[in-house]
Length: 547
Image 1 (cartoon, one colour):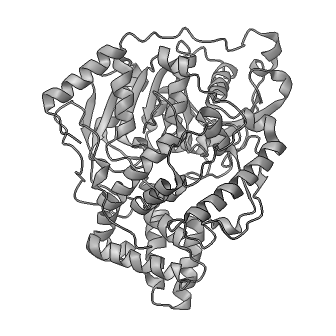
Image 2: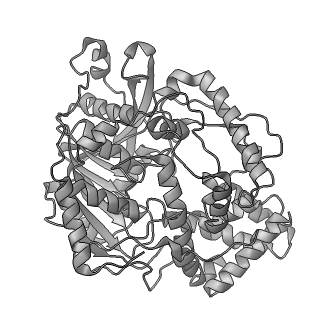
Image 3: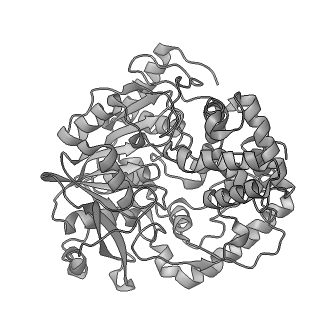
């Protein structure tokens, strides 16, 4: 990649704004609120009750309800399903509504909304905070379906528990197995799965807004939820007002498969340049060595031991899942450090240590060889939205797994191959409208790379501003307490004050509940003042995992 001067980068941003400033703001589309065929949806009254515990929270400070939505917004005669929503038990006075989506896309928005209130209580200044689940999610309270996996032949590349060591034959076998599994699932739940689309999710958001008695709503979307709230401003620009887009997918042109391929390189770079150095500085928690080289050597030993079945039932995939962990610091104490520490100790062959490693490995990553069924929601969403778009050949996919071993195997098969329906994303709507809102983004985010957010900002023009956290190496800005991002974000949410230009904040040292670094990471282009730096060069990836 050619480095640009400061003046050149400034020109790029300015030109992008000029090119896109003329995009028309849509007047919105019919939400069917005045159509008698949809009256029963708009006139329902939610019944509030207790919330179940979820991924991040115990549900003790919120209450939950179900909202009935049509399985097909284009034809309410197709039947109904329900989605879960949440609200605070004791909300301060408010005049505005904030609808929260947790991303994932299979994460509980009730849990996310509760955590948002706990981490940033200022979000409740003048807002009723309501979590709105996507239809069909596992970690929610609405309508769900489950599908059985097809019988396994043993030829699939994950059958030895090591998806990072594939062959052309094993990838083809896994693709055939997946196609068989999904084909049966589609036959069983066709109407329900066809309705799981981003446009339908936007209509669900709009319905919740109306049912709760608000003419307008503000939105907060995290991670894959960024694509949802961005699309919502395209469909209903006069209904959704202040929109915070935290950790951005490429919502200028939403494409789930291409997003996943972009992610694998950035995730690998983050493991190499941030997570492994962090582990080396906290040997008292991870027990893997005090230098990055020592950590990698220890992990190679773990990987080899699991490959040779010397660590009980722990598989190489489970070891790799522990190493990659997640870009969210909240998991480092809960899962990443305990699992890697347990696997490091199990290298001595002690049965007690191996048993502890097996227990932690099962908590980190479920062995697909033992799972009888799956929730098809996230696959239906991705395939319905943008379909099969990964152009790589099988040899190229295998090559990418060698280079990007942290999560590269997740893109080996095409989940949308042979999908029966056309993509639901309206490319004409994307091309003719702009998104309005405040983007917040970490520079080295491994899950929603800054390179995609940079495209969003560049091509969307001045209808958005970005708050970039320079040198931040985690996923989801909302999980950290940075005064610079908080002040900008909540000035916008609470008072409607959009910054005049992009804002560059400085990252705090990487941390978790029990571990605190003293340094930040710099493996990208330096930021200068308010000017957004170019995204990092992912070709810096160089650490090889021995097969």
